[in-house]
Length: 246
Ligand SMILES: Nc1nc2c(ncn2[C@@H]2O[C@H](COP(=O)(O)OP(=O)(O)OP(=O)(O)O)[C@@H](O)[C@H]2O)c(=O)[nH]1
Ligand SMILES: [Mg+2]
Image: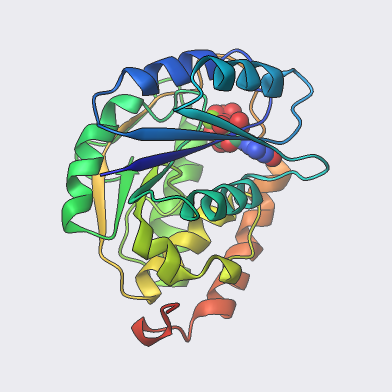
């Protein structure tokens, strides 16, 4: 199986090298990593270029100038890797919150499902113990109560950003349908997957805080997610399996 890994970066100069090393160390057959950097002011893009030079077969960089956002970075990356012969497409953070060590197990699970989710909210899944009560409660509320209730989802970790897609699942979703750019991107993808009848499998993970660097998550982004989730529901609620992109 050929695996493409899409790695969005914004100011990850302290993490990107270690992340690439960890990914290339895995024994999961043929992998190709696409770093999608949004012109990070801290020079992540230049480090990424050096890595691509060092590992030309396995590492590639997409530089986006004048564009920002996790969602649009993933969409651009997904479109690019779908033009290659990749069978499986990984999405994950580049700050070690999503540990590469779970990838072999997740890839094995992809044989029996259409998308595999590295999940904090199934038995065995865990949040970093440094998270305070407030942050925990907010995350549990957003995932297990608010979003699941509004969207009627079965998946436990609705905002998970660690996933492996089968090539056919991404094609069937039809990436032109996805509008969210921020963190709601994860919610919209989860909703589209279930509405279109794809089989979702959750694998428990331990979600560790980013090792180094600064968070891009602000209070404003969190608040925005509340009404953006309602928009996602409105936009896609009528979709069924018959609406998979041919
Ligand atoms: N290309 C691109 N990547 C982004 C952007 N925003 C965030 N990222 C990357 O997306 C991943 C998740 O973002 P984080 O800032 O770690 O968000 P978080 O995990 O919710 O927050 P912390 O880990 O607490 O910082 C990281 O790998 C970021 O570098 C963006 O606008 N463009
Ligand atoms: Mg992070």
